Image 1 (cartoon, rainbow, N blue to C red):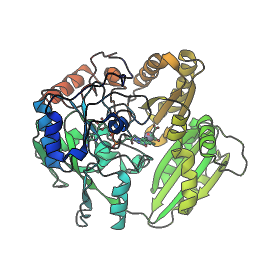
Image 2 (image 1 turned 135 degrees about the horizontal axis):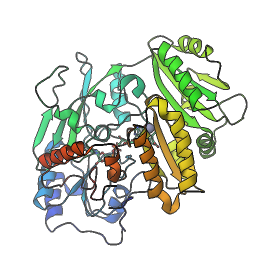
Image 3 (image 1 turned 120 degrees about the vertical axis):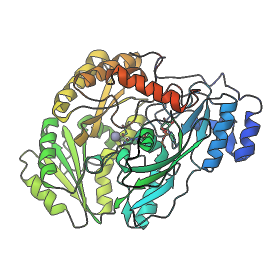
Image 4 (image 1 turned 45 degrees about the horizontal axis):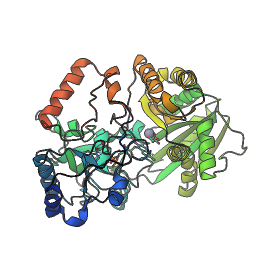
Length: 472
Ligand code: FAD
Ligand code: MLT
Ligand code: ZN
């Protein structure tokens, strides 16, 4: 299989006779979409890179309906793509060859916050923003945050083990999930929503579903660990000379400011793109473009600004800085970082690689990626940005033409050589499936294949994701 996987929308697949009527009897006709005008939005991913036709999008309202939908699809042997907010960036949530799409966007129930345990159970189709609003009203917060918060669903975030902007302090989605309810391809329901903080009774099937990208089961409800809602935040944007300096500043702050929540790195070319796209002025006193921006944010119950400023005063390397404590000014600084994904997409359909390397490798890896881009795709535009504390770069390449595959392979091989991962937080999807063997041993891949067969013996859930018929 070659990537990206595309299919023309001309030759539209049709559903087996009887399936649409059966689905309509389960969820109601209004939630069974087969008109191409209505399915179109579900057939292309957020980047516009991955697209394929579906005969039907079905929108169940609760776990019972999900189970009945999956049983019906299994009966007709129609493979199913679970889809949440469709903000995934590796092509795993859109159809490829005529699969049905099971949209979770109506699984939005929010249970009351359980103050005793500091946990909450939510429907898998609830957006991150909806859950944030819900738990913040009760004085809590969810520890994972990302720019796609208005569309990304909790189920999709669990399925991809999403990371985002606060991982350095709180860990990724995996660290927040204390239970799930999920429906297997044959319609059986697995319920692990007790949220017991201690449970050593055998395999942890909840955690197995984190990062499973819709290949093992459809997640219907999620129980999340909550953190306190911090009252005080300070955000600084620093202008620096290079990546090595950013790492030195990170080490200094990390070692002395326990309330550090975020450390995000961007570079001059990406920042210029964001400024143009959002018509943003420079955040600094002078409009000079600086090579590197490092955004740091601290969150606490008492103003953490003094701690952060004190730490930064010990850093001789700052070219410029901007600081914000009130919400509108903080959001204005964040726009320089969060605007990257949109700005890159507005400039074309990007090749997106989401990788991480050990921090001591990061500065050299940055130079290597710049060199590989020039060598393999002269004329292409590279936009790098990411989550510094995890060594997690988002490698975005525009205008690579037909060099996409060659360049992907070169970058991912460099990652593997340096002891990194070919996906830090977006997942493998179809985009990286053929390169998984670069960083996973044969025994790991064998066990993964056996696991897949045990959960989904008919291979009906998300075929093509994680497992490649054509490994590199
Ligand atoms: P979808 O895109 O619909 O699906 C993603 C995958 O999960 C697919 O394989 C799908 O089959 C599967 N899936 C979805 N729902 C379920 C379910 N209920 N049960 C089983 N499988 C399911 N990601 C980060 O990690 N960090 C970031 O900082 C970040 N920032 C982003 C910023 C922007 C502007 C955008 C567009 C994306 C960003 N992402 C980021 C990526 C994206 O938001 C995540 O991958 C998100 O977790 C996917 O959620 P979703 O509901 O959109 O899932
Ligand atoms: C981000 O950190 O902004 C994202 O993961 C999205 C992207 O890679 O574009
Ligand atoms: Zn990211």
